[in-house]
Image (tube, rainbow, N blue to C red; front, side, top):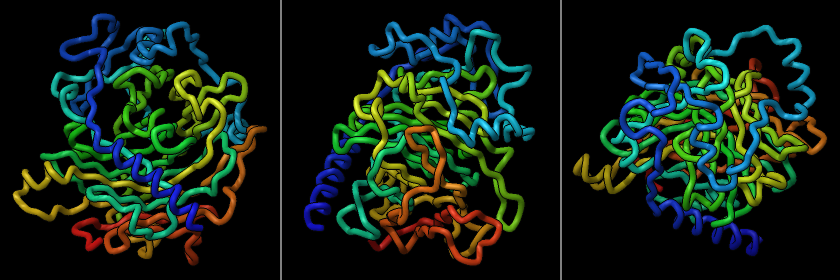
Length: 399
């Protein structure tokens, strides 16, 4: 036990050190229209999407993808997903760009303005091998409430993520998100692919939820959101990977919205595919990884919040800064329709079968006074057996 805690602590300290390293990503479009754009969309939120040649998107600036050939579809699908695709008649929650999206052979890439390039990205880390409420895994400005599989061999995940719009302040770096993590390695050798929704004024200049993806290959010393730098290959012509969700936000005691996320490793190419509501969005090529090119070792589901303590203190002129809301802003014990949920948590094995995660999942919650998480809560009859409820109001924490 002591050895396990020690390894986890080392992993955590390396991740924490990585989180202190600020970095800036270059962009294919700093100001003005991308030189290769064949069509441009401007959304009601002020986002500009340029339709660029699929082989000229930022992903292909990655040195490992110099001779990469795009794989539009995986060679095979997880069994249940394949069955659902053939029988599904439901529409994706948000149909994306109008008029059918980008012309064939091009994909939508969100234009990065000059201010976006010089602004520090909200920094991410990956909590180490923790058990519930271990003091050594807390660090200022960040908090998690998540469920984690035992270490093992995994090839993807499936989950339905409830969509909310937690309150996030403007003026300094802060985010609130709900996501799934698929990871391998540890410390500075940590590889992750991450998918969910995020509210972040510092990234998007608004406080609405948007889909996001993230990946790192070196424990967050470097990494990338969406298509802001080389790595993730966008395939869908009309649904950008970072499209907004604000027309499908759940309401307290009202209608509930969620999105189905499938992340899985293609057995032949090794690429990690992302499907949203059974539609192809894109993939992370196997070539950019040195751990996930083989397998994943853990899968997580839950919420994360962050604020930059130094910026917050300067901006608010106070020593103590509040954490933003997580999930719906309400505790799990308030139940379905009031607390945020993730349902039908599943993992994928090597023969491409979707199955229930090994039990017991580890629940990690580092600030019990402002956030919480429960798994398979009794009395919640409208959710399937494999679910979590998570979140809370945020605010000042005594931890």
